[in-house]
Length: 142
Image 1 (cartoon, rainbow, N blue to C red):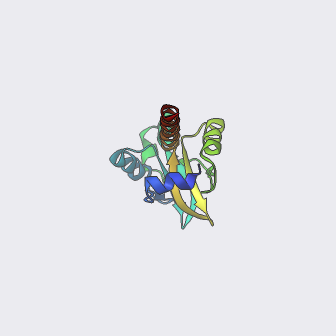
Image 2 (tube, rainbow, N blue to C red):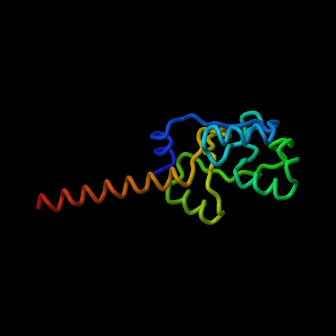
Image 3 (cartoon, one colour):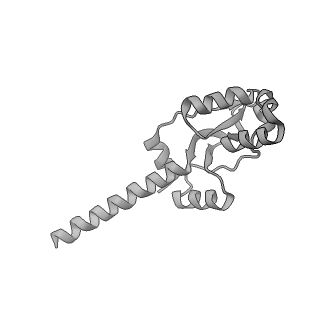
């Protein structure tokens, strides 16, 4: 089970913001899409991740003035990323170790996808349920 399999079932659309976007614009996008994080792009390269946590920390530190700052000043950088060949278990372990909830998927220096811990857990649960059902079917046939 690889990250590529998750991207195949999830679809290829990745919502992102440029490094020049304002924090307020990025927050509006998070709220509108009901997502927890966005990759921040500088050209085709992922410069960082802008998440709900970044918003919280910025407002706690700087107050409402943080909303007018560029997202590049508030994002988490450098981003921790994976390739499409990474195993789901490996990505889950990385997320647990680094205490993060989102990973950009990079191939050839370009962003090809973005996965959340929810995507990975959902995929794992579906696979475990399918394996359990296959075992039940096999046992009933014997």
